[in-house]
Each structure stands twice: as C-alpha cells, then as structure tokens.
Image 1 (tube, rainbow, N blue to C red):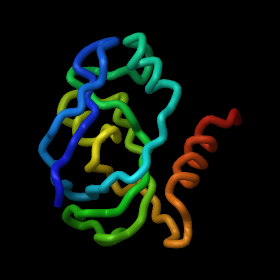
Image 2: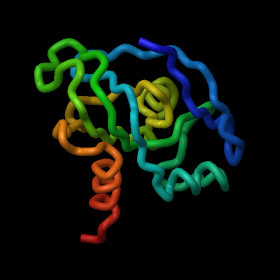
Image 3: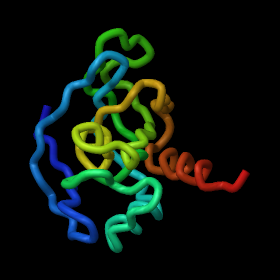
Length: 144
C-alpha cells in the first residue's frame, strides 16, 4: 500500500495543504477505499473559500473536505462480508458533520478513506467511475 496524502484544510478560509498522513485501518463494519475519483460539491467550495460555518461545516481543524468518492476496496474491517478487496465502489461518508479523527478518517479529499459499509455501493467493472460519482452527486442534488 502506498503512502496516504490528504488535502487538509488547516483553518477557516485557509489554503489547502497537501500533507502526508497515516493510512487508517477499518474497524468492524468499515472498509478502506483507495480513491480514484471524488465529487467536488458546492458546499466544499463554500467551506474552503469563505470558511462557511453553517450546517455541514468542518467541526475541527485541521480538517478534510469531501463526502463522495469512487475507488477500489483496499482493506475490510471485521465482520464485513458485503465487500472484498479489489471491489470497485462508490461511497458517501457524511464527513462534514463529524469532527476530529472521524473527519480525518472519512473526509474523501485523501488517497485512502474509511467508509461505513452502509454508505458504500459496488460499481460494475464495465462502468467508468467518474460518471458514476457525478451521477450520485446529481441524484443527491435534485429537488424532491
């Protein structure tokens, strides 16, 4: 496994910093995903550019942006039977509303991200991951 690199936000309205960070290991009910694609959402930009502190803001700094990603399962936690190493997946973590170590584990603006299996879905080997992540992003943004 290669080194993990994260685009950390050091503080409100501060410039992203590419920083080597430890690879986290999944707990029971979690998987580790090697990211190949992330969705940059409007809330990401608001938090990064203006230090937006409304609903969904980063709770502690340094913090990570990003909640949506697509990649390949690298490691599975105890009790995980739905996914295997090598599965192609998409995920949505909810990292914005979590602080401290949980945000640093689940923020998707890093090479390796931890996700609860309940927020992950398999992707067909025939699908390209970029449109899949963008499709999930568009579904989440549509008014109901």
